[in-house]
Image (tube, rainbow, N blue to C red):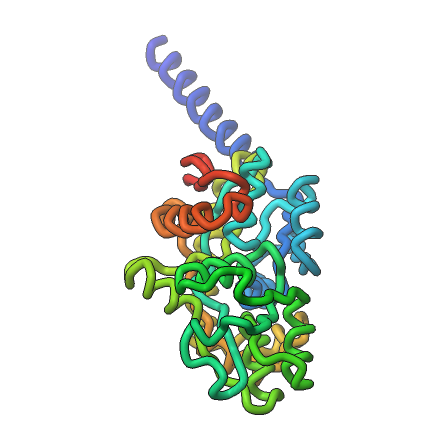
Length: 320
């Protein structure tokens, strides 16, 4: 009798174990994932993953046209994951959107260019018109920050805002003397515009102010908290695969340059050259917390509106 009872208990236990696994599997079965990305370098690893069937057929990749579109998709929760500037992520979080910073992936992509010989020091920018793209996002806020840190008041320069592609065309046409450009648009400008040169690497300028151990966390990926809580294993695997893809394309940009040209219209030769001036590394938000906080605190001191009024609390950083 005891032996029979023991067998029954064993069978019931095994049954419960399998039932539990089945529930977990069902819970983790992702029906659809919408991943929105910009027309820029941090999207290249995503395109590599898509091209090599590393994303899975349930993942839809959407390239957004501007920050307004991206922000609306996040607010409406029509995008599960989004690659956006870190300061914009802070703004949205402070607007009580239910998101977390999943990772930081871009640590340097912005440069100031000028007519050859025109700018030898920051003081030479006084009285100049500086063409800057993406008002309110990284090019704008970092330009204003670096100007201030180098003793230049905003009224001493004229910040002329337009889209970065428009700025490239102006530089090519000789209609601008100083501009701030992200890669790979910088490479396009250097190839086509006459007599322009790189005068400042924003990542290096940032380290010159904050120290070599403080990198510039420009862009990251945010995730809807509801999605993250529902599919933690999927998120963990995605983080790992994305980080591996970043390493691969940094080592050899040619493995993704063809699909980048096809999907984003960036010529292969331009993308491959641009990658020599691009600093991509997928760092978990919790691991990059100190650098992100230092960045947001610096922007807060300049203008609270740049980060949404305050430095986000610990809940801003996704934890596995």
